[in-house]
Amino acid sequence: MRACRRIVAGPLALLLPATLAVLSGCAPEDETKPDAPTLTVVEDAPLPVAKEPEVREVGAYAGELRALGAHGGTCVLGTTSGAFAVEEAGLLALDIYGDEPDLPVDTGEVRAIGRRTETLLLAAETGIYLTTGEKLQRSPASDALADLVIREVHVTGAGSSERVWLLADTGVLLVAGDEVSEITVEGETEAPIAISPAASGTSLLVAYPGTVREIDLEANEARELPFDLGAVRGMARGGEKVVYFATDQGLFSRGEDGDYTHLPLSGEADPVAVDTVLVDPEGPLAITASHVIRLPAEGAPQAVATLDGSDEPHLAAADDVGLVWVGGGGSLSGFVLGSPVGFEADVAPVLDEYCMTCHTDPGVNGAPGLDLLDFDTTKEKASLIVQRIAAGQMPPPGATPLPAEKYELILRWYGSGQNP
Image 1 (cartoon, helix red, strand yellow):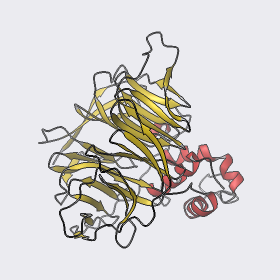
Image 2: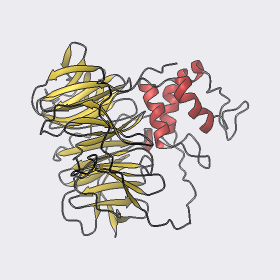
Image 3: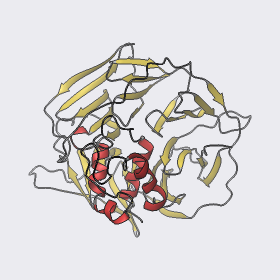
Image 4: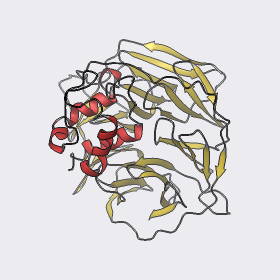
């Protein structure tokens, strides 16, 4: 089935520019025709909560919850009343700053929040905003996108390779450099309900009522996923090919090998609906009406926190210091379900495997000789490392590419303060 990417606006300066040269490249194509994927059903009900985690209770918020995002040690929620950051003393309303004479006095309803390399991107009633400390900065793209009701924001890449993916009331839009493109699939007449771009920016999953399409943006082709997943409520990436699907029939996952697994999360009873799914440094988490459920690499899923059982769907986000934030039913809570990523235990092994083959002394392939296994050296270069990985410059074309989940690990280390 054909897919179409049609340029609908340009030029457009959406985000703050990064001063990086961009080198593009791609891995060689695998000409081996893959076997037909399989679907494995794991009937095991989640193991009960062994011990309730420490909880940071935030309590009630103003308005109805529409979006939730986290970066570093900060959680930001968007409601029908505006944008708020979670502080020790409670919720702090985020004010807008800038020199524009017609700057809005508030965001209005905040409808979506996406994570960038070093900040959050908010889509609101009065514009597109970037978080800057405890303030918001209005994007120059706001006027061009003013007529859209944006429901999801996703960001891949960085610098001049950055791509912003928008799920709007009119369909799917891609902002790349100075162009806005509309992405459509031939024959699909209903509005999409969820999207998930690959970290490489070359493919996109789009959930429609009744089906999910995977769009190859280089070939302009779309294919339907091979299994009926039910009504998809959200998707999360665990890697370039690994995807988790929150549905009314439980949780589905696609592995690196292309095979699928279905977890009804109910034993022999009817499947339990999953409100949303996210991936933190320790793996995927499924959020249902009553529990936060960890999905281990092997064995039965494990309930790790108990929720209020609200009929209102929950939203969730993982910050970089070990908290999983879950909002819904008029309240927001942070569950301590992880720990900050550390350099020695988590980041150094990744840099050793994917980076030190070039950053020797002297360097290879034009790379400077750097001891990236030294904490002080890497911490000093952390911002540049993160940006160049996101821009596709590191590892260089032809080298073993860095898996998306490994980059996410480095990004979380960077966002949590570069712990030793």
